[in-house]
Image (tube, rainbow over all chains, first blue to last red; front, top):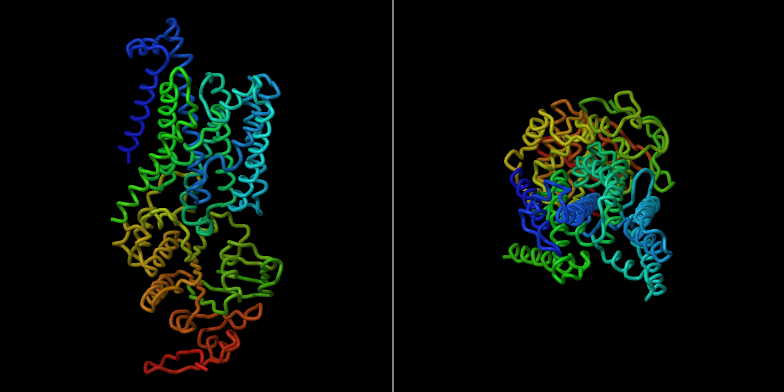
Length: 327
Length: 256
């Protein structure tokens, strides 16, 4: 197990180093190394420190947050089809951000509005799914899906109104998911919330392990099922809202990465959460590097790219496995 | 050990069981019998503190069950249900390890030194030592039932509550499970078990509780509770009994 995690961590460092080499200006590895060591040494250092590095770190941050949030919710609901946006976080954030961009709100305020609206939506969904001290899984899914549809309709309405207006490209790029134009400041805004979410996720791991046996058995071995559900929901909402604030709606990572993590390290929540974080970070860095280079100088939205590469790869893995199992 | 006074349990606002008062002592094997819907499972869950009482009191070791924290409760009471609900490919050992949860802090990641010993002891108690690393999903119904019991044993709680541990099992597997439970009683545990077959209760339990008509029809030593007359009342079926060569009485519904 230690070897597997060492391999995952090494892989993550590897793709991060590789991604540093990718960009509009060609810079040699030696120059990058030099710039890393001397942050104020000129133009190359500025490119490395202000453009490439924040993008890689933010990509890792977004990927890890979404993957942990997905693993948490899939474990809580014992449903492999759940993704971190189930609680309405992304739809709520999207509505707020789309409305504020189209209304011309100062761009510095937009992420905070999105974050607040995302969390508010998650709280509403949780309140609708509440039954006594605990949560009803079916109601949670129903409430999340229906609020998300309502918000999607509002977004569609706004998009038809702003067509051709100056704000349209910003809205579309945000909806498709992108890491372009994000800075250290954006990361500093989101990081404390995600950090809190990650701590709650780690604390929930033992309860998640017991919940694998069902709610009744978990309660029978002493899990405070209500508290575990609320902790996990709060954690995944904080993580997903932080990620959405930085990158827009990046799909796929939160749905698929936990599956791959489980294949690699088994279903123990402690390992799944850690492996999901490493894999999600690595995958997002790779996808972002590709999104910058494949059609350079144009950028492919990272959400689109992840779906184009990830979905077929994932289906291939699953179908191959099924065939092996049948043989 | 358990003292129940004026207990009332409702399902969707309708009274299911009312004015139940009884005691269960340490080291007893109690079988609960009754028709489907008589309230056996609901009563068992309430006794285990997994659902609140709608009236009256349940005390375990002279302390109200509602005042236990979840972990305290699970160190006192282990509850075994047989519904299979999970899809993860857990090994037998991983399943049983869940029984150690109440002995840890709720956020604790690492096992305690005693955990491995408790899990090994539980595997041995249900005779599954060689199955520890098998995947749970590959086991037969009887073996799965023994895993659930091992999970409860690993909890090291003095009270063991089981909801229909012999349903879906063949005769041999059912006898094996009941024998293991009897061994737990002989080792000092208290076992309260919902059963469907009065003959299983007659063979392994000390006392039997018959539930009917929203309350206790009888809660007596098994010889006095498991009579054709009381069982007829409990199940609304004509019963007959035969005494076998070994002298044990067997009770069956009449074929008519």
